[in-house]
Image (cartoon, rainbow, N blue to C red; front, side):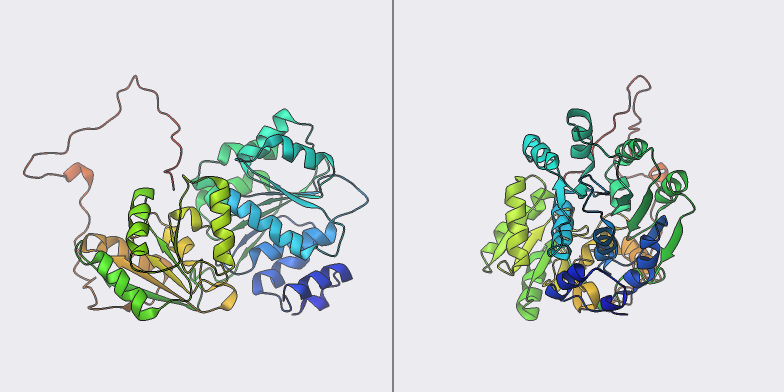
Length: 409
């Protein structure tokens, strides 16, 4: 189906034509009529399937420009995703009078308050900054007709569930709720059951988490061959643009420094950098002015880097969804892409589970590991070594449990 068949306003069609949108993706085709009909929706689709536009286009279509109030609220987990989201809406709404805006931490709240006072129709926000504005500014959500929770699984992983519930408690009037996510853990299902009204559940490619246009390569390494294997792969493949993921800032910094001695156009991104520095790098990477970006998982969620041809997991991804989100930075919207993951013998059990869970047909660079004869992981209760049993690290009963923030990326 083409966008011209949807009955969209001519100004929106002009904006879509400018950015090269002609045909709807499957998730857009399925969700559009229900979004426009004000139905609550839980939508799961593979990363890079067009979920942002599936939400943004109907929102722009539905805005009443005669009402100078926030009519759609979109909650996202990170500053980078907020900027990307509002940029996509701005492109779609370029020839309309719809006013989108993004608020997020790390930017003067007074400047954002001033912009909101001049009128915003679609607000994209990170949870912390939105709550700050609700407490310390005249911001009103009384005219919000549609609330969107994007990257919902990441929101919960980052510990935003209390913030999400607070925002939902502020929307006491009747409204539509749209929940978009690449994965659908039980916590999201519980949230949806509590706050959504008779939601329509849409699961596209639920049996195929990874895009079909993505090639999955795996290579076994040891400590001494790790860096040389990476250099050899880059020299052989000569990727047009690549993101290399590490599990920590320290690893990313060290790897970036070593790669800069081997290749040109290498840069680094992690959560400890200033927001302006990260935004500048993301913009240069999107403009294809950076060829290799070494990153922590801060770059793994929701961000659309259309030129990325290769994703390299230098450190084996940790967590059930990390592989899905990292590799989702390539092979987006039907484009081809390659993911290579380096693993050691100690990762074999996790690798076996990763292949099973993601239904991946791997391409082995080198000898294929013997997955059938792997020993099960020993539980901590059975742990023993030449030094004796692992010490009991149980927290003292009089020590209160803290709500620790997620690991820095």
